[in-house]
Amino acid sequence: MVSRRLSILATIILLLFVVVAAQSVNIQFFRAAALNKSPLNPRTYSTSTKFPRGQIVASDGTVLAQSIPSGDSTYPYKRIYPLGSLTAGIVGFTSPYTESWGIESEYASYLIAHAQPATSFAQLLAPTSAADNVNLTIQTAEQKVAQNAMGGQDGAAVVLDPHTGAVLAMYSNPTYNPQPLTSLDPAIVSAAYKKITTPDSHGFPPLGLVATQQTFPPGSTFKVITTAAAVVGNPALLTKSYPDKPFARLPHSNKLLYNDGGSKCGGTVAVMLPESCDPGYALLGLDLGADLMSATADSFGYDQTPPLDLPNVVPSYFPTAASFASNLPGLAYSSIGQENVRATALQNALVAAAVANGGVMMSPHLLASITSPDGSIVKRYGDTVWQTPLTASQAAVIVPLMQNVVRYGTAAGIFPYDLNVAAKTGTAQTGNSKKNTDDWMIAFAPATAPTVAVAVVMPFQAVSTYGATVAGPIVKCLIEGELALQSGLPASGTSTTCPS
Image (cartoon, rainbow, N blue to C red):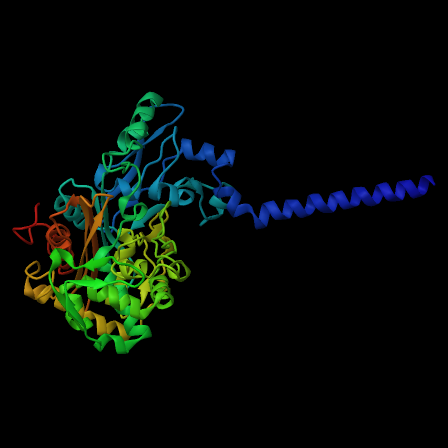
């Protein structure tokens, strides 16, 4: 009996040794990398406070964030942000007393000092710790163009490279100065944090990014997607002529959907898109049907979170096909970007970029590369496709329609002829009393060989304003600025109509 009990005890002890050995292997080999990077790791936390963080650098080499000696024994290094509010929405901040935001949070595991690969026998025996640098795609000159052109008004602007998805500029108002949040005085940090988390008169807190975290009715910019639904799913509707009337009668309703200003419009898609005919496009959406409209919106990234490398990015919204089963008037309004349709500035920039890039929507990204302290490449961003809503031939049908928006449609007179811009305006009435408009424009250029795609939204504008008149001049400055940069010229001062 005794020997049997000893045998059982020995077996249990052996099994426990096996469990301990297995867990040791798991921790030291399989989970080592994750545990080394975890902010909950005491060693990592100690390293993050005792060593300087890596730099965050713009595409032109401008330092956007760096650590400097603080003179404090507990926190020997202090973070500084040389461009302040210009890039705060992207870069974010890190503080000993609050959570990190933006790129500071997204790439914290690289920016915090960590063990560097051994390049010599001495380093193998005594590993060194240092932080990597994060290099972004952002162009500070184009970022400044956006800031100046928006003139302090609430809104957002996004500029993309349509072929790679690189974010060239992404600026939002309201914004904030991140520097007080790095103070070693907790009272200063607390007061600053309270200030930037308090919403302004439009309900937007300065902390965050309107471009990726706020959605608005896209208005007539959504007609690009309605047009795409016809191109993809029912091309015969492209040549159907819709009634030339100031309104459309909606099914199962006595409500009339009027064109802006009550003017008459109609005809084929080629006629209606440049002049942005609301009644005609509402009827087109009804002809396309809920299934096709919803599927096309989803193919452009609606109801999905864009894979941008920033925290807290929100999805845009288009209702499900089932929700229109007993609400055909809702489908009509949704087809012109009203009703419950909502989009971020990032989403609308991606729509423009997809058409510009032959129907291929690239994943948006801010990261260009990560480099070690000696300048060697640790990681380089690899371009990836996110959505493919159109074929190249299908996108080619839409491009000239958007060019005509600029030539003689709702965006006529905004862009110089030699820019060769393709665009779509949008003016969405908002609020219960319809006292405000959310003014949009999406665009890309040069239309025949695009190298830049832009979206601008300026919400809470007066009801007498339009996407063309409010967002249009901002888009013009951004396109001119970006094309100038691509030609090796300064982004500012390219036009007398763009503030510098």
